[in-house]
Length: 67
Image: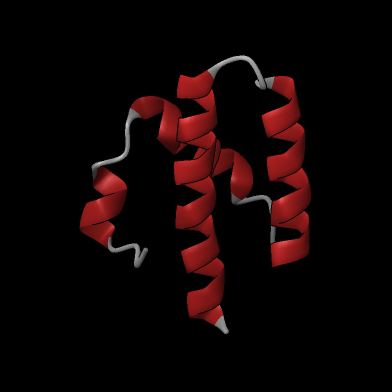
């Protein structure tokens, strides 16, 4: 999933909040650790897990585009 500026503006409010949270990560290892913790915390909520995954994908693309 390639993330563009227009794709980022199409994120829901909750997805944007997760993306801001994940932007604390400066490398993929830290991003994965953050994501695993968020997924454990919200394991029973499929909507929240979907938002976490979407934000993770967006942050992954941002990190990959820097290298």
